[in-house]
Length: 170
Image 1: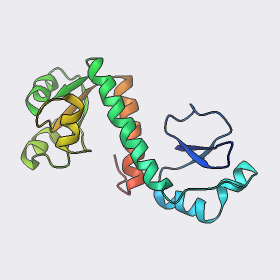
Image 2: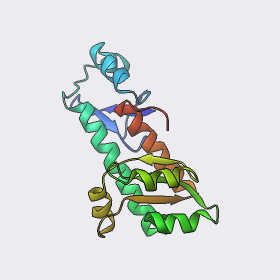
Image 3: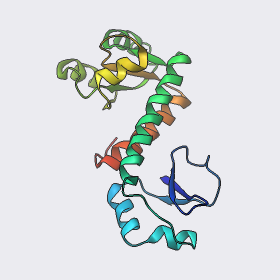
């Protein structure tokens, strides 16, 4: 679910961390069509009991914030030693049964991705360049997440992102 709050100046704000922003929240399923329907029917104003202004760029802002949140969580996973980078290292860790899932860059190799899909769930997200920017290394195409709470939070945020894009079925 996506949480929204009304700012003191009457603007609708997306609460990417789901509960960090103060105020009464309005929750909707993370589907863009449902968000757009809620905006069209003025449901946010009805829920908050006051006129609530929704920016024309709000839907794109939601996607941007979710993507930033995923990359931020991946950075935390890296610092915590929960992120395995590169197909070869991921394959090595898979033998221990410690891998929750793999994120594959959208421009990654189909052949390598299919080999990984036979062993662990693989989800498309980001590009090699975005992965490399996070790690400050060249040409990263795969991130493996070790099992644990952080992997579950990343998976949940990825589900919201993919669903809002219209790609349900994580």
